[in-house]
Length: 169
Image (cartoon, rainbow, N blue to C red; front, side, top):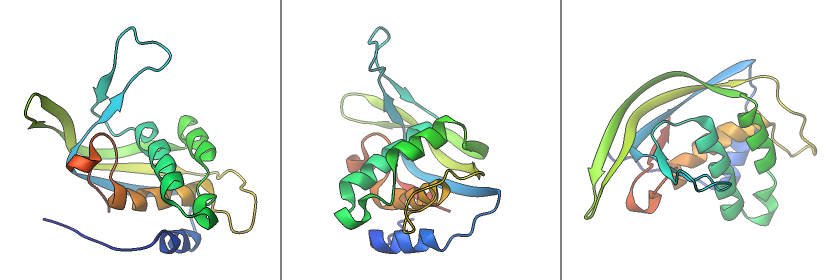
């Protein structure tokens, strides 16, 4: 089933501002097409790169925060603070609470590409870090905004080829 949508980054920010979050918010992502993450250890190339086959928060949300910075107009760029999102994810502010993932593979002309499809639930946990400015979003509002953004830009490896299609459930 093909799902399409249209919005603006401003509308995503407005939606995020209206959120009144409890101690734990659960968000669910559906990985509708083959998804994987090309991982390379930048500090050491001893083992080379590999493809991560699980949607860990640290693989998803820092990348979406960088994508926001690339796409957002200057007046909205500061709504997502990449360092804050990365620190929140690194400190286990988000954890996987449930999943129904299946390994999946597609065959390109010269090689098979392994990944996964399915659904994954994440608990986005309290407390929020303090954010400067009255227009600013809390880190959890930023995470939920990025989860909605994922539908429009995809996540992971080879999104331009149709991989990494994600729906916010």
